[in-house]
Image (cartoon, rainbow, N blue to C red):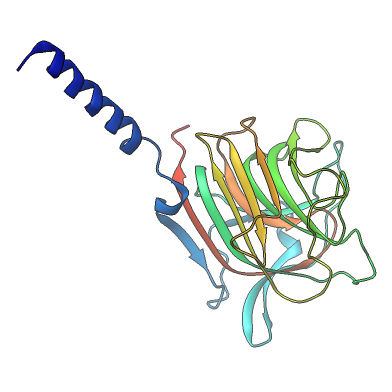
Length: 228
């Protein structure tokens, strides 16, 4: 075989490896863990305030409840969370159901999904809310300072759906090779919040709120474990 042909074959093989041997796409990630809380247990979950979380019966189903919100600390950020301590992930898909308990007249009401959580002052969160502005219904980044909005949708223009006390399906996905992050509520095909951000590339996932209470159920995490 001519050297030029050998080089071409090797180059094509290299390209195929780049395409197929890299980080798996979101659709190919393995299921790491799932919870329906029907056994009444929360093994694997770590709340920042353990006394504010419990498993309760709601509509004949056992669900994970945030009973009471926390208090603001030195930096402006969500006050309550419970994270899955055994799963430090890079790329992931995190899904489940959530239900906000705040009065529907409160347009600041929120329920949050956390990801790439490294410590109480370094994490991302999706803020699902009943209104849209620079602080509500956003993808937020807490990076050692007050939270900042990082989603590309202009303040006041993101689609918000957390306007009632009904159950809502959620999904958050992240592809760390590109930094692409998407958040879905009810419609699992069209995201309501999107961004590309590589400030934090791994960490834990979790659920909670900025300053409200609520229920969570049917949690599932697909992901690639971090080597860090």
